[in-house]
Image 1: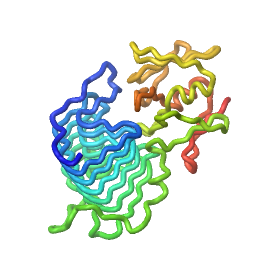
Image 2: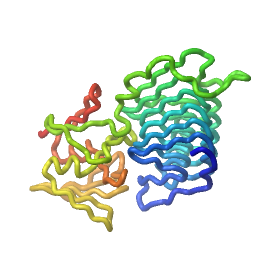
Image 3: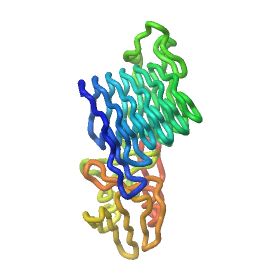
Image 4: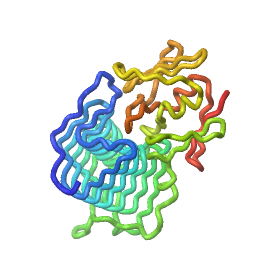
Length: 321
């Protein structure tokens, strides 16, 4: 995006209150969006869990300029990042969230080298940035985050994950203070290689899965992180566990069956069933990159598997009981 405007859009509401429906830009798994200029403004998310401006769900979003402003969302007014978001320049401002993250809700890898995040409002946490999720990373090299408003954490609320303050000096940027008069807000390139967490953190197609120490290979779309939960392609994992996988297009429902076990889960639903018993999901099943993606821990533990996380290798370890 080198110019122009994405403006005045409203995400379509769905029958599920947990479904995602962004007003402006949805950048899904494996996709790349580069914003060099222009505006994403005046958009409204279509559900209580969505962003007004940008929902970067497992994709790669680079902001080199332009403005994301005046958007309204349920989870974030400006940006929900559940992938990799690099901000070199530009402005995220005057967005409004009904919950957390007025400017940005970061549940992936967010690296800020320059630009400004200002005058955003959140009803709860993180007026500028809500940084949360066990696997999320916020790398701060420069830029200015100031004059944001929230009930808790006006400019940045560190609700979880890793925060790496790599600011080289006071002239490069600040959290909580505006730039001095005459200071440029353009990108402050790092003088050292970014920390390993930026490259190795499983935020966008970098999570690996093993079943009884055997790696699972994914065709195309790989695992993604959404709100601190890992979603995996249903066929890649469950067919490796000898489940039969059937898809009902009309109801957008996956049926997973093998001897003595039957799992039913629908796109956008916050519940699923195991042998007719309803279970709760923290994150609903979703269609990402043309694949049906399921929250791996909740579903596998419901059918008796052990699920562990190896942070050193970014691997989900699935073992038989």
